[in-house]
Amino acid sequence: MKTTTLLLLLRDDEILLAMKKRGFGSGRWNGVGGKIEGDETIEQALIRECQEEIGVTPVEYQPVAVHDFQFPDGTSDMQVHTYLCQKWEGEPVESEEMAPRWFKISDIPYDDMWQDDIHWLPLVLEGKCLHTQFTFDENEKLVDTHIHEAPAQMI
Image (cartoon, rainbow, N blue to C red):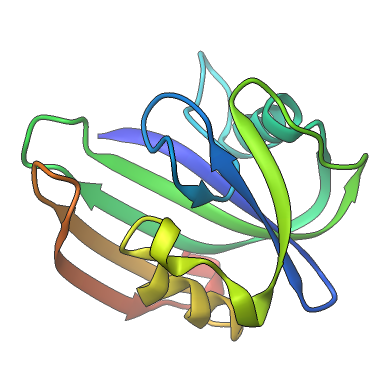
């Protein structure tokens, strides 16, 4: 199972999502993040990926979820460590991989995101910490969902 990161920036009543322009998940709005390289910690990877993808350095962030994604079609299964961030340095800018945009939390474009997002994102935005498991079929369609609230120290 591949370990990856996901970071969502929040300001006032808005959330920053980025349109994935290439690679796995392209054509969908998502947070920023990616795989751990070498001997990086999860937090080091989180910061590096955010800098590379949108030119922002997270300063204050907290873990809110661990998602286990299963892809029976042979795509590598992933464990995604998810964080919310309210303080960062820099302004989000477009990169070769991601095009960031602010959305009102009331107008999150779930129809243009991974199908699991509508199940867990509202819960973490309410302040809940989660451990989830999502299974997708060979067409990237969500086929199974398990969501468990978890104590913050377990995330």
